[in-house]
Length: 152
Image 1 (tube, rainbow, N blue to C red):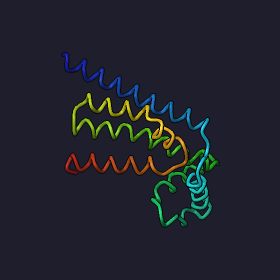
Image 2: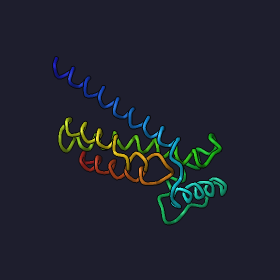
Image 3: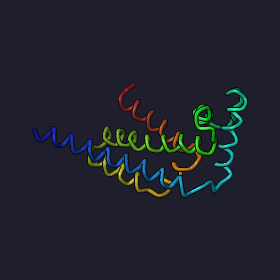
């Protein structure tokens, strides 16, 4: 019986930390605007991808970020907001994936501590609140590590 209570508590803490990560990223995205040429470049490449009918991508970077951002332009109609939304989603999803990897490698206490530190880390919070590709890369790198751990 204690084991089930422990799992419930773990899930509750996990939910609260992921919710805190999401809320902090949304808040930071409303007060922190583009500061680097990379962010402006990502917005421009997303618009270019959308306006070309998904035929033109930047050859230097991962096309998936631009594809999802450009697809959101059908609904949102704002490249700045669409690119931020993709970054916020993958930045928040990275928190869960990193939790899953840490739990597999260590235990649930280390995993909870890891995502707590990641949730309050100012650099990752800012990076996953502005139009940057890095949170998408982070998500897929840790997803591949999780798949490797699970022998898939």
